Amino acid sequence: NAGVTQTPKFRVLKTGQSMTLLCAQDMNHEYMYWYRQDPGMGLRLIHYSVGEGTTAKGEVPDGYNVSRLKKQNFLLGLESAAPSQTSVYFCASMTGPDTEAFFGQGTRLTVV
Amino acid sequence: EDQVTQSPEALRLQEGESSSLNCSYTVSGLRGLFWYRQDPGKGPEFLFTLYSAGEEKEKERLKATLTKKESFLHITAPKPEDSATYLCAVQGSSNTGKLIFGQGTTLQVKP
Image 1: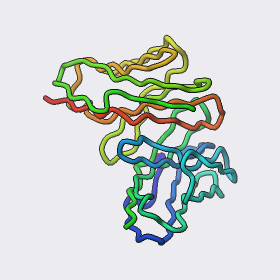
Image 2: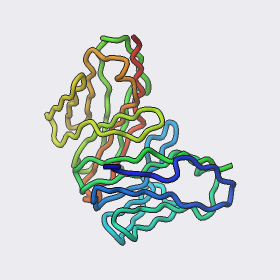
Image 3: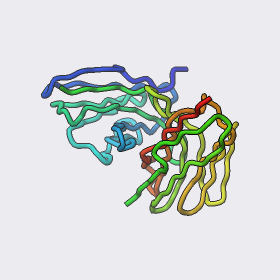
Image 4: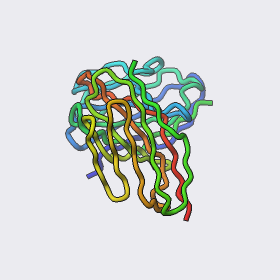
C-alpha cells in the first residue's frame, strides 16, 4: 500500500519555465491538498479539492493551478516559475473533515 | 483569522529529561487539533487528533492535551529517536478539511 506518492522528488527550474507536480493516492480518499513548506513559515495551503472534478483556492494560490480529473490524482502546475516558488511541496489526502491527513514525501523545487 | 503559534521554536533535551511543547490557537469553531511528527526530508506523520477541551491522548512517551486555547505535547523520558520537528494544526468550522499549521517545534534529544 503506497499511500500518497509525489512525483518528482527533486527539480530545478529556470525562471519562466513551467512544470507539473503529480500527487497520486491509493486510499480512495475524497479530499486532497497541496501545501508548501518554507523555513519559519510552517505549511501553507495552496489549493485543495473535496472531490473528483472540484478544486478551490487555499491561502497562497497565486502562480499555481491545479486539476483533479481523476479521484486518485491531484496535479499542481506552475505556468511560469519564479524564484519565490522555491520551496518544498507536500501533497496530502484524507477521507473527509475531522480525519487525519496522509502526506506524501515531498517535492523539493528550486527556481533559479 | 485562524492562527496557530507553537513554542518554543527549538528545544534541546538530554535523554530522559521530560518536557512539554505548546500550541496556542485561535480558530472559529474548532473541528479538531492535530499533532504531526516530521523527520528531515520526509512528509509529516500523524500522531494525534483532539476534538474537545479536556481530551487527552497517549502514544508511547507522548501525551497530548487540549484546552479551549492551547494544546500541549508532553514528552516523558525522551530518547534520541524522538528527535524531530513536531507540528500542530487545527481545522476550523468549514467542512473542507483545510489545516492551519503552526511553525513547528524542532526537538533534539541528546544521548
